[in-house]
Length: 174
Image (cartoon, rainbow, N blue to C red):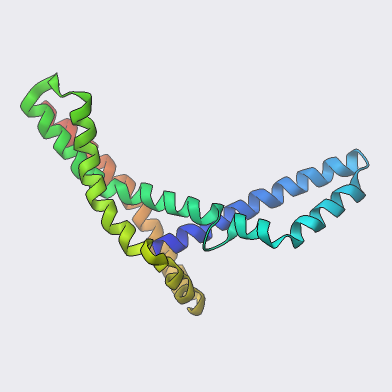
């Protein structure tokens, strides 16, 4: 569900930016007397289903791709907490001699282990399309509830990552 909320938010923001740019272009077209040309191009663009699917489509498109990445970024913050703790322990045990490759492994191992399960739960076999169907069937109150849960998930991820960083700092300074 969280991915669907992120997708809907991404689609909403892209449409707002798109409409804002079209408004600016319209004013420029009126200013330079290209209004007829502009209206013709906008009408062609609105009728182009392939362009709409590319920008806002559920199967493939810019919006679902960005939602996929944002879901990954926020979800990776939770195992990132353990990465910071492990880095603090490694720094405490080995001092400042922790090499770059070891730091990379310490960060990537918990994040990869955590993200594999999230990816399989949401994106494998296009499971998120089932979530879209369920999301479209539900009422507005249910959607608002999941929107709040998604915001809490994202804010909690950032807070968890920050707590992990501070715990690492405490472990290394003790």
